[in-house]
Image 1 (cartoon, rainbow, N blue to C red):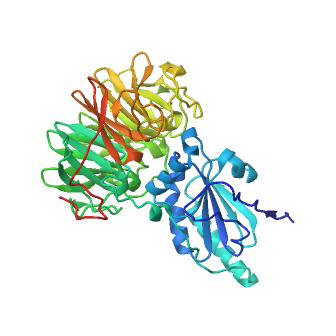
Image 2 (image 1 turned 90 degrees about the vertical axis):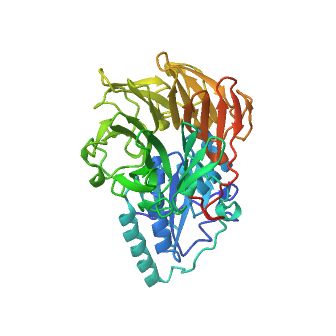
Image 3 (image 1 turned 180 degrees about the vertical axis):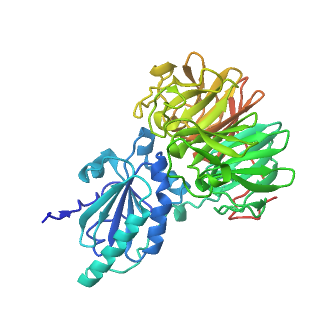
Length: 504
């Protein structure tokens, strides 16, 4: 008979979030416990959050989920940054900050995400890694509850928690804006934390808010449609059509500004589990966390973060297909069919190449649109753990989870997200230099490196101005590219959907 293994106790002297006091396994005896080993940069970790929320609701009187945040990137080790991620992704279970991978090692975890099941008597009964395990966990929890009901070792009682969102409600006018798109005196803002789009003039005057502010997948008029954490956008100015990567709906949406309606043009609303290169009719083909968009002619190119690929949608035929990437998470250059990416999260073009912010590899990649159709690394180490903050040339450059990239006037602007900086890259030579930000998270206007950002993740250049979606500051910043002066935009008539009636 295999000996049962007692679950190692959780440290009480480490930071805990989403609870007013540390939780111990001893105190939780009588409940089924799932430990979720995660790190907030990881797309796979984000994908299982809806599964955990479903299970928490279904078994709220007998199941406790505890997130064990074991950070990959240096920036993710900061408790305040983890708190912001909890707010952004509406995580409603306690989270332990696993400093130095102590809990990870005690439980012999090897990959993100890993879910560890502990029975009501405090014994580890199994673990599972990766995505798509909701049904397996559901069956296991149900079985454990029945077994321990018969033994009299289960304690049915709903756990009361003090959540971060109760301490810090999201009532700012913008909430975690992830991307911004500037065009002809108009700004399109992905107000991701409020599940809506905001259209304003560059002076901050609001023209439209699109979406109810509640997450959902509903088409229709601006005041009845719904999105779920929308991110990257592309604009067809001639036809007044805005294309949107509706990330958590795993869909692409089209906003008709003339008719003021929103429709779904790709995706089924369900996450695809198929990472092999394939194609199909857009509205019948499941997608996997589309993160950013770039329109080239009649093609819409998609940074498909969830499947680590670049996709293409033909806007005339309505066909979507894998354009580059095998689906493996790595940083391998070569032909379109043999190359690999690592959570591509930003995309732009100079007409000859697509340039991709490949976030988990902390690299900028170039993907050919004309012969030769190859993928190459512009700058960054090409190693999933080769991150840092080093300016320089090509493979010597170190970025940290870059999420945004914008081509303008022969250069690439890069949102080096976890370094809280904006950098300038020469796409031909791979030279990378810090232009804005001193590397400390904060909100500070000023000039050049005497400025501060907090996880900036979206960029857009129009004329001599650069606009930045400064995500954790819930702000849009404007940069005068002649002087590198940074100012924070104000939106006097915009408010959180929870506080006022939207202005349509």
